[in-house]
Amino acid sequence: TPTGKIAEVFESFKTEGYDSVVAITIASKLSGTYQGAVLAASMVDDLEIEVVDSRSVSHGEYYLVKRAIEMVKAGSNVKEIKAELEKLRENIRIFVLVDTLKYLVKNGRLSATSGFLGTLLKIKPLLHVLPDGTLVPLEKIRTTSKARERLLELLIADIKDKKVDIFIAYTNNKDDAEVIKQLILGQRSDVLVELVPLTPVVGAHAGPGTLGVGYIVR
Image (cartoon, rainbow, N blue to C red; front, side, top):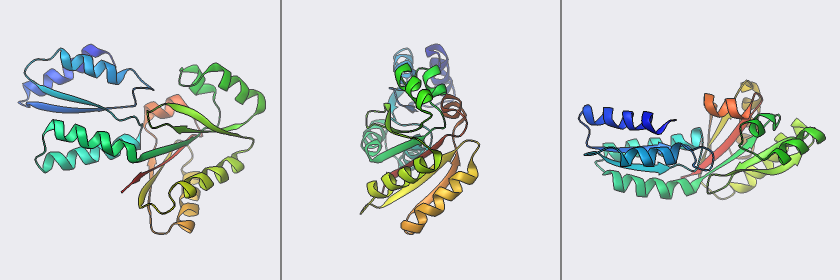
């Protein structure tokens, strides 16, 4: 998103009578939006703006937005909200299962070397989002069924002894997401598992057949 456009949005908030704004962006490691928002904030006078790098994507960002709304309703100021969100983002983890690395390499989210190897070996890459927001390969698995099994293994191990809410973000594969949901509930009937469509921008970058599975520690 161009910096000028972001600044225009901030200016419109000021025109509408707002005196403070919290802007929550996609992970800065995946997009220039965060840096653009920080620069745009410096261009706008008489409006207190706090920009938060979610270090996440899609439904991971939603968790931060949801918490921010709760804090606004409770009367918190923007600095308090930013501080809380920067702690909360440490409790979010996301795994991504893509059908092909082709799209992620084309748009620069992964190195061409990783993409070449994935095409060569016909693998089903399992990726994850690091705590700093970087998207990196976790494991390379030969078949879709084995990749899903491994994703489930990693998730269940990761959430052991934790109270979590889980989301499964799907593209053109809601039925697959429902299968994974039931497998999760079969081992952890105590957790909330939401099925949500992957956001369009992330879906376009990752490609059809992508599934994102993530959680937040409550």
